[in-house]
Picture: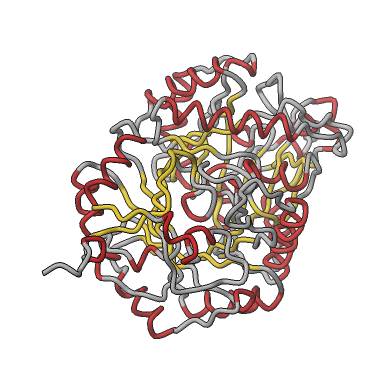
Length: 248
Length: 248
């Protein structure tokens, strides 16, 4: 009795922000209208993280514990009750209990895509409409546990599963080629990294868009030079259009 | 005997340019590595055409009549013999005899996407991997013949068929909504127009990218305001990255 706060039960989602609809700015669903549910908390600390406000526990007091019903109500309010694709992001959204939300949303016609680094496998991955596995390359200073990553791929059977790999440099690129070779059946999306991610307390900070664009052009050239025609190369369109600004 | 020049037989393709591989910059295949085969000649004269060098017959002497075999050889040389997606563009590529090229390329593992306004239906549309029908909105000053357009949709049964509609203003937008409503089964891609298309003799002319980006943001807002979540909104990525430059 007592002592165990309601927010720690296993159906509460820790939400950093819910915003949209706007278009998905990257990856397989680029250009698709979507509402984002960004969760707070992450088991990774990527060197170039662009969402530190949803990762660093220093911002934990801005993360709101919400019941699945309440998240769904906010998604429905934002989308005017018209079903759309909901993007589950983070932080690492895989550490949250999304099963009930997905079930509830599906019953109302909503679709769900989730993006995670692949460090935590959940049985409800199979219920997603799209599972984006985004293993982090060497420049992140993270280490992929490939056994768990494989468990994520297997858990996602039933969802459309794709790989999305951020590339900053040649070492990342070569790593991405290796990862793609491990998973020949998964579509691969490559994305040039943003070396000017927003500081968590200032989303009006400027992006070196010229530098990011140059990396995008380099990445296109790199893929073409290798005749790697299965790879799809896409930028972060929302950053090109809106900079680091949040909520768009 | 004689008098009928070889270039006028019905297997000769009139080619404005073949270039790539680069990424597809717009529409359903955005980000996909591709070789472009741009044909010369068009039955339309859109007010904002961005490929006048392949449309205006003043440039006809730059269009090279080529046999399907020779086009295929150039595509293979550019792609290093590794199969990829070939984009057939124009001008209006539907006025060219692409059947034999598609058959030849398929036998070697190549895939074919074609983009046309939908003013000429061809039986070989069914052999395409992707058919992009891009009916021209009011701002183009063109008039769609909906009977022929419908024939194009029917001819394309067997190909993945999508609608891509360029939008400059509110009138275009409302027109796009009507077109999408006529074809509820076809995925719809909306693309903000470029009001600074390159003059045909100068591909280094500057693009008002800020203006085009502002139109893109407006179009996203417009779609969201209508809860039109089936529409996908994508810019011309190649223009964002490379300006009006040709051959990229």
